[in-house]
Image (cartoon, rainbow, N blue to C red; front, top):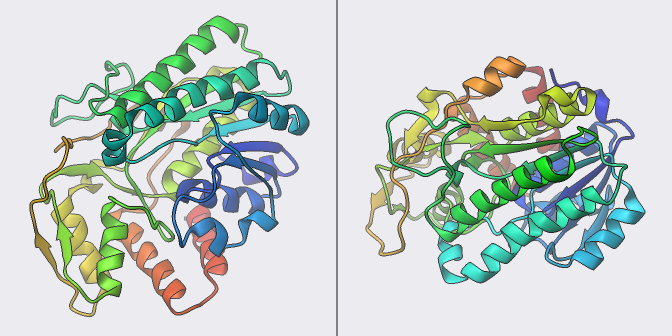
Length: 350
């Protein structure tokens, strides 16, 4: 159902635009001719995808804290966006144990602040809050969680995103019940792709080890996650905001994840990476003490498939292959922006 030409000249506001997913999302919208404004902290890593691809030269990029409501509102009032995608977050589980207050302030009150700006600006017609597959009360069942399952993330990150969902539900009922703004949330699983330099993520850890010609250290080899290429959820986000912009009946809460065959163990994921990387890349299992992490997590995406006839386009092998492709272009000082454009084009045509 996604028609990228829909976004041409649309005023789109993205929070968290300097992050990994935000940078890929900006790329997609720039290519579609959208009028993009981003609001975020500075890129969270060095190096980072946002600066590597010179995205700041093609959009209006505002560096600001999502917790700063007066500044956020001032930008919002000036931009008058039609579409808002809220990606800004403290996204790392282990970091949320180190700094829970900051995590809750960013993920919960940040959402409140964005929704306040939406509430006070009638220009907005479509709003999407991007949360996570970890919002559910995870009982480590063998079947996938559905959108009507209880929300109650375990750790501060997951729980704060559950709270972000509940804030969105409350605002939707309290202030947007007449449907003048279409509001949805999207709960996506673990994403991979070129340009992710984050800490405590398995594929960036694989890349760092491979570049040093060292074995990859795997701390939780038998955990199962719904891995998908970053373009998979981004396509779905844009599909949702377009559909609900055109018809409010599509405003709802959606899981976004890969097919069941691509919900793989960390061992499987790393083995595929080693095969695609080549150079006899290897890995070792090493227990590293740390806070609680779920061993099994899977989503049921039947709703998204039924409502939008959505399907996953790139399986896990292709996702890792594209990640390795981007990384090798980057390491060889090639044109990574052109590589991204090519991958986006190939994905949309798949």
